[in-house]
Length: 148
Image (tube, rainbow, N blue to C red; front, side, top):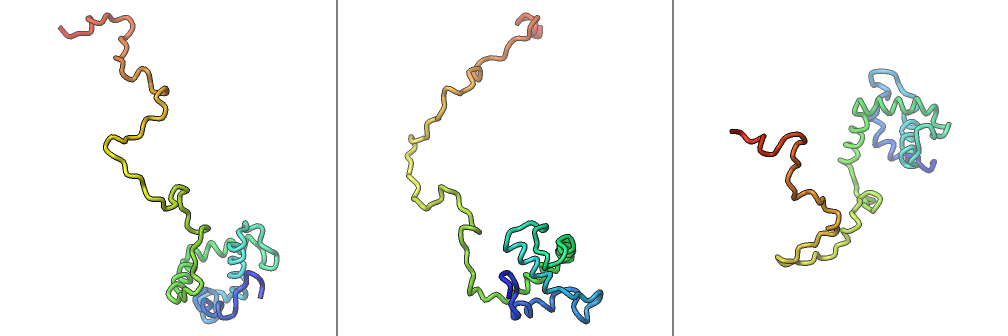
């Protein structure tokens, strides 16, 4: 079995869910297993479609077929079927899947009193004009704008 290939028992679990099988409407596919293994290889190795090995066939055809299956909901049916039969023996969540913020290490939060507000860090960067009146328009005396 190739490194990213399917075992026979794994293939038998999804074989009847895929289009192109015998007795299914449409063209009978000769290479469903090879195609599924190509998709698995691409995602497990983390490579672009163009870098698929030649043993899987033309990358463009594999990508086109993958997109068609995704649009038709084939992958969703396969995932739902596999999820309903999950054995969770190898279920594992690690840091490659779940990301936490660097400050979420679990330390207890410090209690603050009502007067313990954080001080502004950069007072010198405040806008110096924020408390001033608006400028008078040029050419108009201040009392000429008042209504009589």
